[in-house]
Length: 319
Length: 251
Ligand SMILES: Cc1cc2nc3c(=O)[nH]c(=O)nc-3n(C[C@H](O)[C@H](O)[C@H](O)COP(=O)(O)OP(=O)(O)OC[C@H]3O[C@@H](n4cnc5c(N)ncnc54)[C@H](O)[C@@H]3O)c2cc1C
Image (cartoon, rainbow over all chains, first blue to last red; front, side, top):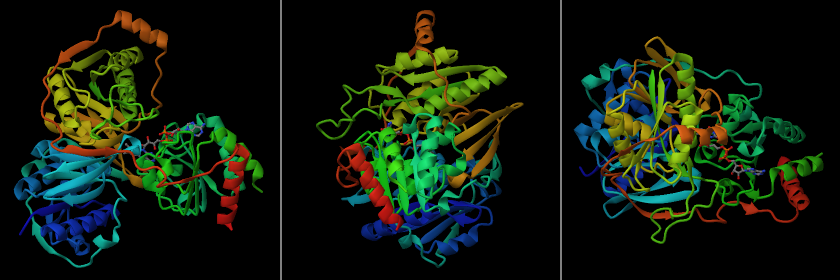
């Protein structure tokens, strides 16, 4: 049967997350090279029907429990630790998402398995897996060698198309271990974001500001620039954490994913969590005084001029 | 509640990061370390909880050249205790760091562990979740909006698109803090200097335990030139080029 690759399925509100299909696609590719099998592990309550969209896997292992209905780090970790303990897969792939962060390191610690986090690429070398991680805010990459273990993969690293295969693979139910039922962490509800003033996912031109703008007062000149371009201002996370802009303007992992025609950044370093939200913009132009800022790897055009020089000059030139 | 905040010192990303000759790690000799920004938020949140509900805050860090300064700064901000762990190498993995931190926590009384959700260098996973797993206590990552209600904590876990889940928990628990309720406070240098004279750091030596279980075969910086075409000229000329690109794209 060969080596097993296990993919942890992420879902919310009954919908399977894109990153799951990205992992399934990559997992399929690796399994076909090693001659191994690909297994999707699904946690939920009455979620069995979701297996119908996991056709890329050879098998679905399904764990059903009411404490697994909505993601609960305590219950889900317990279930994953049990499944991995029983199956001893060669490789377990977990998305490096908010949910996956609570699973990957827990599995590693509790099963004493090596873990490589923040992976953006996976390859084979002999019998080993080579996982490329993006570290130090995207400034440094590492290739780690794993004989076996756990890899947490950043969303958007692989195309999802290859993982979207209809058809229900064989479903094997796995009894929830006792410690899924016990515990002191209780999920109490989902909170949807409040409607925004502007819907940045529907805006064609975005002027994105980051910590480089230094103070809230400097937002006004960015608003002027955005107005001239017929667009809107959006931002990296620290600007929202400072409460200079509402959460509905945040682009990235914990913010919104945007795909505008034009994405113009000022004083944004390009941390992986920001890139996740904007890398599919059609034209990206970055202004950042640090020539080694990772944003320049993702932009089409860039300049290391000071934003406080460029913005007034540019605004003055536009109609 | 008694809160412990394990923190990581990480290389300052504003400075250029150089890679060693073997291309397996950073050239650490001349690195400047600073507190991981999410840990700074964890300290702030811990202090906020203490100020509103009482209890204590202890901050724990591994030894680096800058650790004393970072820990004294935490004391100056209002932490009650600061512990410096010695005996580990500068390149200690998250697994090794987590095991060392857990040993130290074994001798401390705590209800809640708050730490930054992630750090720039955790190639082998986030310190907090590893620690919680070794301590056999529940954990939640990407947390904000922590509140104390009686003997329980409530909190939010952030997903994408601004969606959040709310949780309720009876300590003990470890929370990976994404953002404090307000920008981390600043400790004036004069106050830090004063604390350095008055207070003392606790020092604990630990024996390093095995690490990540994987090796780095290559470390590199992503290739320059792969990405953006850099615009050149004077400020005016560059602004002009950007304007032209925008006008062309807008059509
Ligand atoms: C779970 C999780 C989720 C996250 N989700 C998101 C998310 O959704 N969105 C997001 O953005 N981040 C997110 N982050 C945070 C992310 O890791 C970074 O901390 C953040 O993106 C950094 O924002 P920044 O680029 O504005 O700031 P910094 O990284 O501090 O960069 C500021 C940049 O400004 C440049 N600069 C300074 N002055 C000037 C000047 N005068 N002119 C030009 N340039 C200048 C500097 O060179 C620097 O590169 C998340 C983190 C975690 C852990």
